[in-house]
Image (cartoon, rainbow, N blue to C red):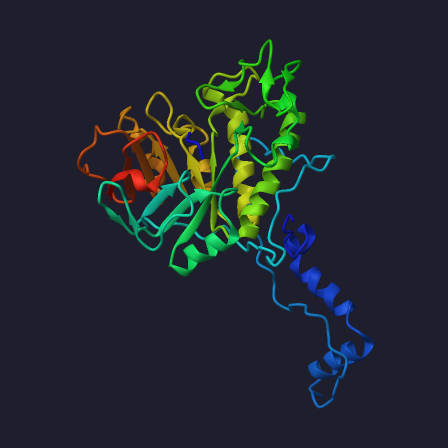
Length: 378
């Protein structure tokens, strides 16, 4: 973990599930003259002239999304109170997904730059402080800290853009921080100060140590409703800004110090919801860390491995060389999905041997600033 208006699809759920019925509805919506012309055309009498334009309805079946399988049903509760929406471009067009492959998905040969702390990033080539010239295919940037214009410039330079946000912690400096119910990040009965930070007794119970952030409660159903509302707005804002995908961080609270009772199953359900929501906006999505949900202590894939690998397009791992655990993400590589490894410090001085699809970025400090990259390996 590092420092770092909703676009509705053009079709309703019923339209996606019953395309032929939708087309019949379109036929019934034609003006009488247009309907008469359609009947005549089917009878071979195409010479009739119709002056009234018909509605723009397709006579072809509409491709529909393939649902993501999960170990348990995915929570899809909708908040009754509107959260503060993240601002989006007024000129953005609705984003549609016709299948799980309709969005951008990085290939095994794609290369990456990860920069949350030094934006905007130079493009197409970054000159690092160590003298490297880095020209990679995919930029991972902070979503709120990047403008639509900056993202458009990256696109103009031939880049794809993945946009970061924290999906698992409350951050005191985010513009939508007041959209969260305080008991859903501080815990029940814990006080907050004027900025929303947890204070007093119990204020450290759910804190992400060293970062001044607090874990979100994805175990409590009412909190999950609140959290999903905020994350829906963030994902929609990413699509409106032109991001090609999202990079949700801090999705391993189940294995960290928090007192909500969050389980591995809670985490998986939330992850699958994030994937489903991102793909509904035509966005790629990566799984960051959370390797224990992919490979268990026995070294075998977990009960959730297949669902998660299917639901995410690539994975990002921090410090797996340091802790000798890069192999726990092998199911992604086996599925033909790339892996980004990030290491910090000066211990790795030359590129190690990597498997196909693996990329390694080494930063001189514990800081995702592309000017501090010392190695870019593949």
